[in-house]
Amino acid sequence: MEFKDILAKRRSVRRFDDRRVPREVIERLLQETFTAPSSRNSRSTRIMVVENRDTIARMAGMRDYGSAFLKNAPLAFVVMGDGNASPMWRTNCAISATVLQLACVDEGLASCWVHVDGRPCLQAEPEGRKALDVLRELLPIPEEYGVLCVIAAGYSDFQPAPLPPHDDSTSVTWVE
Ligand SMILES: Cc1cc2nc3c(=O)[nH]c(=O)nc-3n(C[C@H](O)[C@H](O)[C@H](O)COP(=O)(O)O)c2cc1C
Image (cartoon, rainbow, N blue to C red; front, top):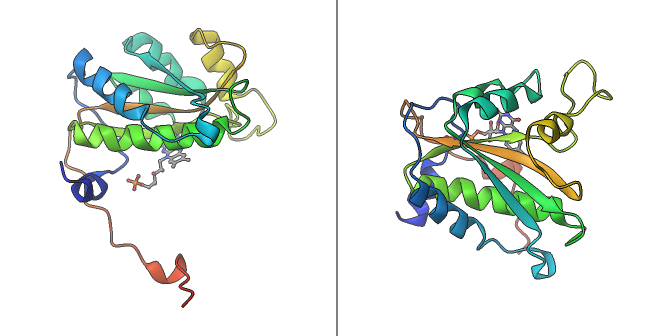
């Protein structure tokens, strides 16, 4: 797919049909994700691939806002960073996650980011238990790794609306 088309087609999709994502597609996505640049070439990003529907459904309960849709996804990528490899692990993870979402579009897959880092389980208790604590109970995440986000992925069960045109006037400054 043309890069322009990939950018135009990417939308956050939170509804998926029942099709599993073939293993060879997942492996291509991972290869593409790891082309992402990283601070000082530290390559601190680590990815955990979760295909077990029960585990994904439990992960969906990590927050009481903005993560419930995850239970419908056939596939979840946990985007982790090794803090020993780079103090910039969060930034590296964000770049990796973005490349992963664009690679999903190229494979005909839809995806959505579920934020983890710093997010409380309960919106009403910002200082309470964290979404990361829930994931650590469910998944074998090494102690020294942080988790920036989970990327839910699968085949969309609807045609998302195209991105609205962007209003440059508020976000771009030209210096001539
Ligand atoms: C850093 C970041 C955090 C996000 N966290 C969540 C989230 O926790 N839950 C969710 O449903 N969507 C989440 N999203 C998706 C955004 O809501 C979505 O990208 C935004 O509404 C724009 O829609 P679009 O992706 O279709 O262009 C997140 C996106 C980013 C980049």
